[in-house]
Image 1 (cartoon, rainbow, N blue to C red):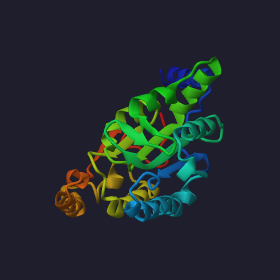
Image 2: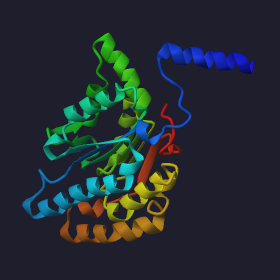
Image 3: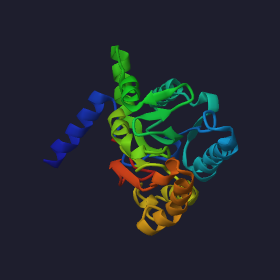
Length: 253
């Protein structure tokens, strides 16, 4: 029986041209960082968001750079959805890349993500990303879905984007309940825990608990109530979808 199952797996692997990886090594991992926050904000907020953009990709590269064979950046004018789609497809088409992880830092709402080219409705983004009109495109999309692994979405209202990212092929996706304002206490510990081999969900343990969230969010909510703006609904609690137990070495499915 075991011999039959072994040869069955070998057969399925050969049919779909996918090697079975129990472990994904450093050289076979790709990290994509997409960050664009300062182009559409009010002038008085531009410097703050420019700094956040810079720290996002510098911190991610500093902590995770040695744990990925390749790191790709889509920043400022390059942070467009067409370029993101093209980059993911190019990486997925390479035989040396077995797992693709994404850190996404954009302005978001319950129904949209603001790339540099335009505000994309989540439904339109999903449909466009999955579009495959030819046999070769369909074969490539099979590879895309096979290799996409982790989506760490720093955008506000990210929980509303989770379902689409899972449909696009990511094994796991995480996003905030509403306005996301705890990155200064969450981002670095999450990346460090992920690098050290924690599961994706466990990487958030220190920051995604009631006390830590209250300490990070309540001052922002108070400011929002004083100024009567969207900050009053800040809720950085992270909601997970998909395989939250994946690790940096886990083979995507």
